[in-house]
Length: 605
Image 1 (cartoon, rainbow, N blue to C red):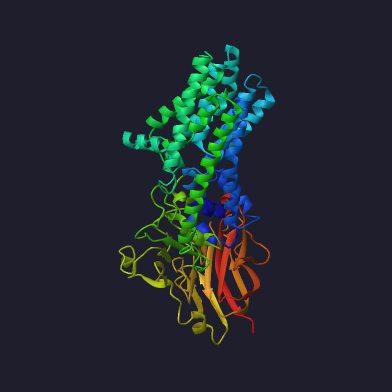
Image 2: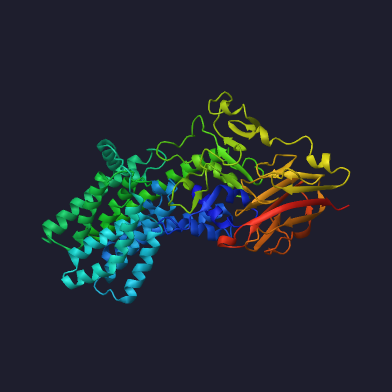
């Protein structure tokens, strides 16, 4: 679910109310090959909820595989399309359940690109090259492994099937830009890293188990062995029919047997991890059986083809049955800890390690990221967001933030599941955290600093006047009757202060920063007048805006290059006993900063 959460951040990042998200994360708007699923879900989230957006994306991932198989096989040999039924079996593969949505989309697109190029390889004019490159660009932004394998297959097939040197040279010419894009990315992403290889035992087990179709357990293994046995029989039958009986020693489609052999060698010899990327062997393995399908003989009786297609359908239904059964277990267990309660808005949370991670843990560990569901509404930052640590995802950590550290405060909330009362994954935190919710093995901890206050500072300072004046900064001589708000004064329940790391600088009786800052104060519900004071640094003008509890607060303010203080007066209505003021610079480049001198909050009687 991390993909869903980061797509949600991508969609909501610039909303003024999401200051906590912007404090911890930053957008990585570079052209890396892992964009498509995030963009699709972020776009869908403008129409539907995040979870529905994920379901729509998953539907596309599942439906696209048999459709791609059909197009691919029809492009190679019209008579082999009955093998496309196998696409339904490969729709619910291991890597899809790992959450690799971008790769799942690229898996289907691989066969569409190869099929399109095969159909047009002898007549690649400007139109065909343009369409090919549109698909290649889309494939690149899905996943780099499928993109690289596509270019490799096109290269091999072009060299061996384009009979004239001129055709090969033309193909090399129009494919060269795609190759440059690949090598540029690989050189940049693999420098200074050591590859990690799996043992021969692991490789052999993955092969004979056909692990690409085993997801949560080995229950489908018997059907996998039947699938492999049937594939071996079809290979032997193809050799007997095409090579021995028909004496067709070399056929054009034999190229796919060679491609299959090359992919098999890649699976056995490539590292499993290189750079920050991984699961390389698993990705290559998924292509093996589908690439063999167009090579298998079609010279058999129609009833034989119907039997084979029936076997593919039966295997797909059996696999779907096991998947539905396992997913029902997964959903039942997930419901015990996902969205059981609501966390406060504008907060940070992290998961606790579990004593054990549920029932379905042999191959896929789906529970890790279920806690993301608490961040799919409002401004709730899930700091255990593993994707933010890698430069091939659209959301990265900002500054010193990482999966274990929040730059600004202790992590306010920690959520855990499958935790015993005396769990060593729980007890070390109880010194600094209160257990605020417990239901079975599900626990929610809140840091003691964020416990509800028994009284408010407002009630102490403004009970008689109904007004508090604030001076921003570290002034040693604030005006009498005003409250000083230094840059390091953090908000705590019942009080007031900054709920962001910014502002980090002081400037001549005020505070200054280029990033958004949130000033928070707890106060009674009702209507208030707000009086703001801004100033210039005498270098350039500022163009800033204010937001109160997520809503735009009047017109933007222009602060000219003068010594005069600029004032702004607005009225707000408080209904949640808290006022959150977010200041935001509307400028770009060198002008993108603000200077805030002070603020007065006065209750309207």
